[in-house]
Image (cartoon, rainbow, N blue to C red; front, side, top):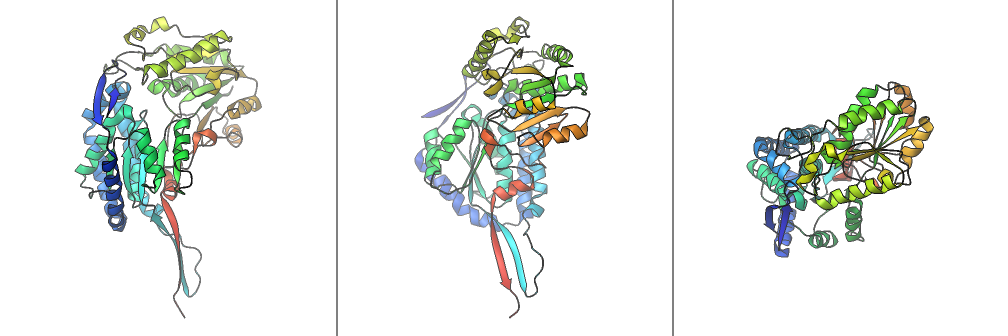
Length: 461
């Protein structure tokens, strides 16, 4: 059997690979387990040299990666450098903090004893990565796992299967010891078997809520740690004291970059009723400046969605909302590239929306956003918290004290002021509710990839 990457650019097969057979799967994990002990014995400084060399090797492939990404998942080629810049930022940060983050924890001194908590690697980390930010999301677990002394097996999404090969090439060029990093082409059934048969010591999954549920189902009774970064329906609140132009321009980018296919993209906006009309007017103006088209064209700023079914789902949300009274502000006729194929979808901005509409409560993962007017902070907070998700939330205001007070009341993993849709590798990346559990990046990310081992040594008798 083969796995096929069907390009959203033209609907044709762009890449095709054989699924790994079960024998290869077993041998791969056996090799990972065999290599792990020796890799854990490698000093952190030496691991850093290997990982840094791999990052350098990946960056050197940029001229090949950028168009490859556009063909695989439809993002305009002009944004390819941004993907690798983010990959580099996260990787280098996690490499730079590894020594201190993995250092033993020492309680207060006690005469006659040497006491400390050591951070031991878990073993083999199984990373299951998504297609929407294929380098950015995968690096969140791969580099820290290796730096912590684990070995890694990567399963990448079918839509971006060539990304797994790029990771392999980078680590091979870096001279990583055999078995320390490997990748496999896997079906859902094979993925479940790996987890249910305890071939891995930890699973790091980024994907949909149903995908996360299937991971947990496979792991029932296996007592292995699981990190889940799942969906989002991320809100923004635009207060009356904000810079309207700044907020509108940045929130358009937060909502429509990558055709809205971002777990932490802006999917719903609440605006102080006093500035609502001005905000919507500017927001719509900026959206109408997008150029939908061939992602291989440097002029294109909005590419196709990952597949026609995904676009149809978002179209359905918009249609249902309009039937229920929502107002659509964008004329699809301004975006003639919709004729290129069913994956090409014009962006849409909706007002007169409410939380009885799917577009305001269910993850869209596409180029649509609903905007509601609110009377005050309390109403905005209640609406922001009225969600099954909780990955990020943002408030746009010049009143820092008011924003901090709002942040304390919003149920979310990351809270922003005057920015959105960004991941700072120095901060913990985490979510609440259906957005997942666990933590990646920052020094706390290393805790998820290690287990504590306490030493209590009586040094005098």
